[in-house]
Length: 390
Ligand code: PLP
Image (cartoon, rainbow, N blue to C red; front, side, top):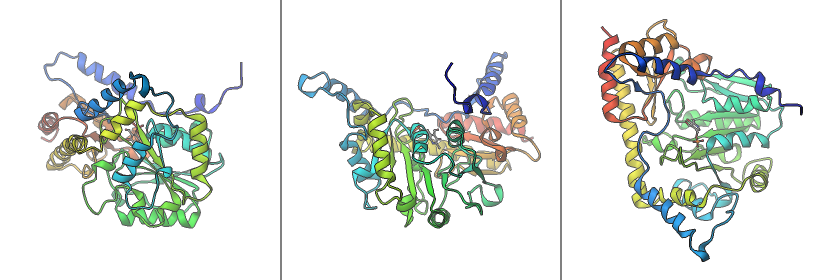
């Protein structure tokens, strides 16, 4: 038996989804005409945009032509997609396509980015957090973790810690709290990273949900970020690619420590790229028709988040997020724990939301409500939630 990585078996992962699935199955098995409404899932609820489907099909057909054969593509991604990303999303930061790397999504890139940094780095992770930041560090056995509290008194916006961190994981719009960082908040982090010679790994999975002009869609809107920030994003939520898989990571040449060339070395040696038709589909998200269709989808999720946020608030509950973001962070009634509120909502309203404690200790007492649903379901949920208010 080879010596195994001891960190995986030792890892304490809060497996909340199997618990939720079991509770959902039990609720569905009850004799009740009312279907359970699920606002737990952060996955897309709408079908693939036709212009993207069309581009993917055309690319597959193209591959059947003898002179258009496509074998392994460039590991960093085809230049047509990198150019489309540069032109549409990062036109004004002095970047080139060599700063942009295509891969199959944010989660894989987060895990792989850790290879750029020594194992004894001190890593800052927000609490509550999107779990992969913690899990990826635990799998490689990183010991030095600084938890950065996100508390109600600061509107759940993470504040730079007093302690030194080498690497910091941030996310805006944030999963799970749904809150967004403005320029002032982000500048504090860029200043911290510059002062501490640190690197920020900035996750913009939900940047396409930002509609307010004072909220940055990318950390590079903050001067100096090009020296200290790596940005990870994907088409998962902006264009419905959760089942197709395509993302991009920006490592500007201006980053210290030759990170751009190290990442390129890693990508070309370890990775054989995203499928050509999928990259053509991602490119189509930037076509005029693709933009119309995908923006309409994001608008619909934003509308759902708005209905959920305002509806819950109208009953006197405290809520955060849900603006420029698909997630609403719902405070449980006074003194109630996340799982107790979960059980109450499932029993009385037959709705599922995620207990905030599943995202970290400081998520206790809150719930994450997902706007990845339809307007009709969001309205129905608000009608049902009235039952627990009287
Ligand atoms: N980052 C955040 C904050 C997410 O919420 C998600 C998915 O829910 C991901 C990353 C995963 O993105 P991808 O599908 O690109 O791996």
